[in-house]
Image (cartoon, rainbow, N blue to C red; front, side):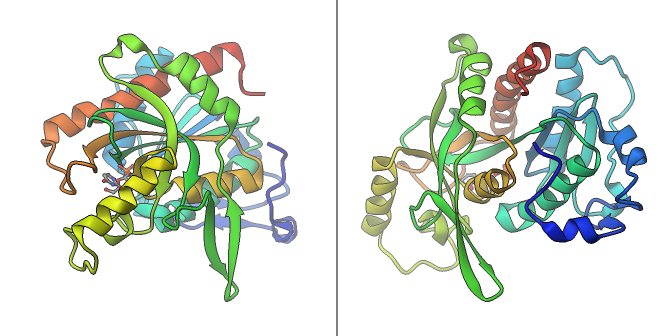
Length: 301
Ligand SMILES: O=P(O)(O)O[C@@H]1C[C@H](O)[C@@H](CO)O1
Ligand SMILES: O=c1cc[nH]c(=O)[nH]1
């Protein structure tokens, strides 16, 4: 990552308050305090819930051999929006449901790693999703991210106009996660496939069990089949925004999600909470092995 983001205005700001993180960059010309706290960060892991990110932080302690019996500290607790835990060079940060909440914290995290002068940090999303023709519990590493219009791009309204940006994740992050993170002996499948990221869990993902639905079961199945034909094997709510924002600023990123339902067989997520919890550990395993390799082999260039 160069030390510049895609915003020339940042160069003119004397200070920068990362509001939702409750982190104050008091002097953008001298960020030594931020560098001291966050300068060693090499991987920023994100995911929907605070509890998952806390568990990931505990898991990363094991992976990285960090012996620390204390409770992980939420560095953003006073912001009351997102949770952030730091385990050595790994940050674990919650992002809420969907692209709108994720994009807020993503902008602030990208500025944080810039002010901290982190060396080529990699951003990852570790989430849950609906599967398309794969059994629940399958881990999907996203190749191309499609939006709800089935385009491999992200659309955003800016100054009253629609801005369209490409939405691809870094090829070498995908390759390395598959090579070093996936293990055929895990007892579940880890596949690399396309992902659809939608702005709505219900209508946007073609469900017929939301509060509103103006299409038939056949319309839904035709749409899901079309998604399947495009190589889409999972559906969540962040991939296209995440891929496009990280690509725009030149930060390498990857999206690793476990399926909790096979959408070709139904809309309702009926896995038990225990089962869901077990499924959520699966991307931890995959990402944990990848991060360990990454840090030991300096794949971070
Ligand atoms: O990381 P999570 O499990 O939050 O990802 C998916 C996509 C949405 O954020 C949410 C919908 O249930 O779960
Ligand atoms: O079907 C699903 C399950 C989890 N998350 C989603 O966005 N969709």
